[in-house]
Image (cartoon, rainbow, N blue to C red):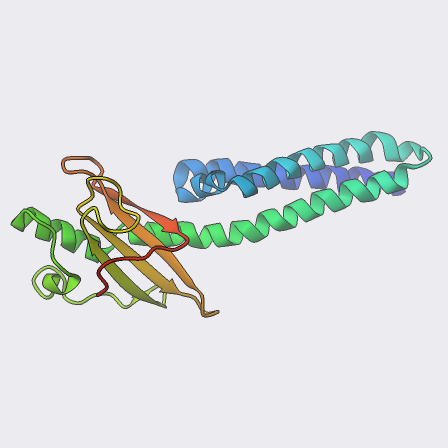
Length: 212
C-alpha cells in the first residue's frame, strides 16, 4: 500500500510540473503570458528549481523509498518541501502575470493611443495635452479599465523621464487596485516610420513632466 502511494505521489508531482511547463510554453506562443513569465528572471529560476525538485522527488519516490533504505525519511521531507514551496511561489507569481497579460491585451487597443496617433497623422505633431484630443479624436478620456479606476499621464518630447532618445511623447496609465496600490503601464512610441507604432510595458515608477 505504501509503495503504491509513493509511486502515485512521485508521478503526480512530475505530472504537475510538466503541465505547468506546457502551459508556460503554450502561453509564450499564444499571448503575452509566457513572454512575461520568461521576462521575470526570479520566476524563471523558480520554474527551473520546481522542475528539478519534481524530477528528484519522483526518482526518489519511485526507486529509493520503496526499498525502505535507512535515512530516507529526511531526504523525502527535503525534496517534498522544495517541490511544494517552489510550486506555491510559481503559481502565486503566475496569478499576477495572468492579470498583467490580460491588461496588456486590453491596452493594445487603447483609444487614447489611437487618438494621439490620429492627431499626429493629421497635424504632423503630437498634441500638447490629452485635452486637445477631445472631442474630435477622443469623446472623453477613459476613467476605468477592467472595472478599476485609471489615470492617464502624458509627457512630450525627449525630456520626458523614461523616454527613449528621439521619442516624441510618452503615455503612462496608472491603474488603482482594490488594495489601494497603483500599477503603472507605459506606452513608448517608436521612432517615426517604425513598425509597429509602439508598445506597452509595465514599469515600477516614473516621474512625468506633464500631467492631465
